[in-house]
Image (cartoon, rainbow, N blue to C red; front, top):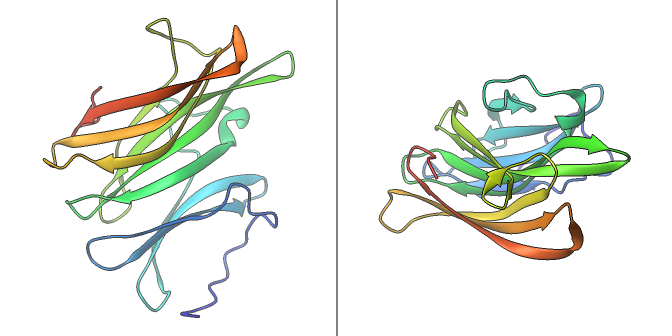
Length: 177
């Protein structure tokens, strides 16, 4: 054990914490935090477990403050980037209609200090953005040339939630699709 770091947390740890080691050898991890109400938190610590920075979610999505519904983030992957930052693949709850929840895929790029550089929310149906589908990203990697990212996840249309499509997303270094 490096250090038992106390962070008030959601006792059931859903979603599961994720971990990455950045280029400086620091640990970047996510977890669900009681705030009150459960929110996601991205945290960076040194190798001794001392907290260097931490940021709560929800962040502003596309410049807008999310509703209470969109407190439901699930960070599925944290990947270190060649510039010393990290990029995350996630899903965020965005809509609820007649007891049906709809999620968007989410990508966020953070610098070495945990400052958000850019973010993208993705939910595609027939080539158009929609709030009535279910999308999530589970993994993200930096492209070998260092000029962007590739993420993979799943997509279900509102017309057929029992059928899942693969969602493959390619972005440039600035997060443009």
